[in-house]
Image 1 (tube, rainbow, N blue to C red):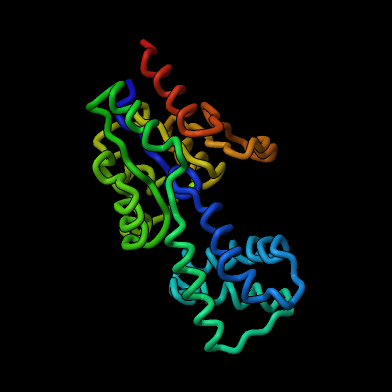
Image 2: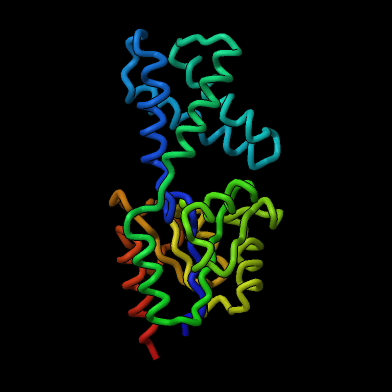
Length: 242
Ligand SMILES: [Mg+2]
């Protein structure tokens, strides 16, 4: 019996990629228009620089405001583009403002959630996300999700991050369900799928860009979906199981 559905937030419900692209084209490309660096190279360099800084942020070594400042600073250094400190601060703020204003849910998210609710009104829907509590809960509210989502599990508030099994155990406890009664939907093979699988939660890998499952991983998702409506189809099928 399925009594709870857990959603990852970033790259699962919320489209970050589009917001990154808009902020890149609107703020960064015009700022360095004369430098001859192709926008794709700026984007690739930012993608390379992000994981290390994000890791330091999660470890408590960086404040959020420095995270974005350092991200741009390191990216521009790699690209041999120089900006004086006041200009870099201004650029970072404009980039963040544009990025935040461009965030949206993937188009099928609301209808998929409503399909689930119609299928089983007493289902507990939860969002399980890593990140700062204030920012993530504000974005979830801005997108109008609060009316459907009974439970928010956010790493900063819990004091532990996905994929740590304690994060998923806390989510099960707060949702008042056992692992076999829950499904986790997420885009990340390790952060979402490994962590949930490790405590016995059924998993759906949201694979929007049609990537192969990483062959070096020793675990597999229970289902795979190209978008949230396909993920919901899996759940509706599982709900019919005896
Ligand atoms: Mg994600």
